[in-house]
Length: 309
Image (tube, rainbow, N blue to C red; front, side):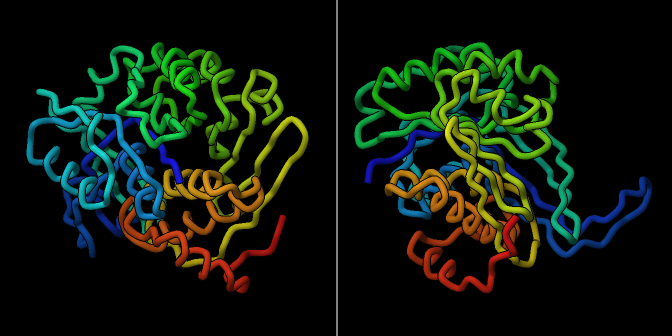
């Protein structure tokens, strides 16, 4: 199976759980304060590698302890690091405060993300060897990359790669101003419900702008996939939620892993739901993800699935 080139943020996460309320000037006792690798590109890449998909990450870290920590985690997972740059700025870092039920609050230092990706990415032959897909895992969190993303996606397609983009939240509130030029170059656009409300009135609006398929992540309701011809809905799996950090990134990895194996849209959506279900059962972005075959065996037990829409 050919693999995926994944670009975007690579972040050092510190996860604190459980945190139900914040009261300044006091001390709260928590169960977990753990370092993890995070960032959309890192989470998706590790999940893909765990699912048996060859993957190379394009990103940047600092020349510091946090950068060495995340680089080591990527390497152990089997992610190719040929296109991971080491720069002078500090590694991007996030403290995630996680409620008992899994909801999160992020405290984020952009660090190297403020200067990385200042030009459209290139796809030379050594990088794309053995690869068939390019996934843009972070756009809005990388300020310099916003104007470069459309050209990057066009270059990926010109190199023979299929393409996808996961929107994530836009802290600048520019949304379609930066996203719209990317849409004609996309085979798959991934959004959650909140992001979709900020982007367009409905999925048909982004399809009209050139996206081949829009994939809506619906959390406990599973997912919905829209093309110009049809709508596919896939129910979620009923699991205990510990931490939703990175669940959307793992969902994307599951969808792409199934798609690259020739799955239908419905099969890819259901498999992506299962990968997301594994993710939310463990603390950390991609910590809970299992191998492809193990995930398929788990899915065979339909009693774990929520009722349909």
